[in-house]
Length: 106
Image 1 (cartoon, helix red, strand yellow):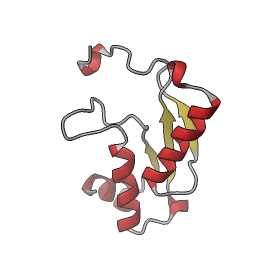
Image 2: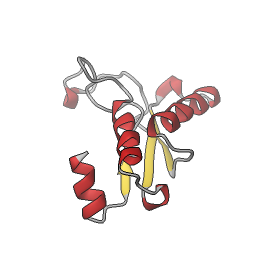
Image 3: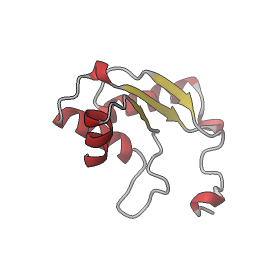
Image 4: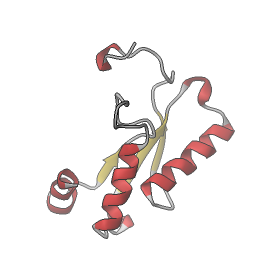
């Protein structure tokens, strides 16, 4: 919360870029979707007017990108973010669960 307080409430930043998949890497006490959940809780607890921030989030790709999954994953993001709209919805990297050497995944 302190980071968003400093950047958004005090620093004038208005764009929050996240993804259904964050944090990366997930595991241990961190699960996919946790970052969106934290952002949603922060906005609610700080009473941030929704129109004061631009929220960009992403669906993670590959064969997962179907009309049904786009709707399901977008609805999941909306729920975690505790908002009724997303300003920018994007396709993340094209292959979900592909090896990402820069994150130490195999």
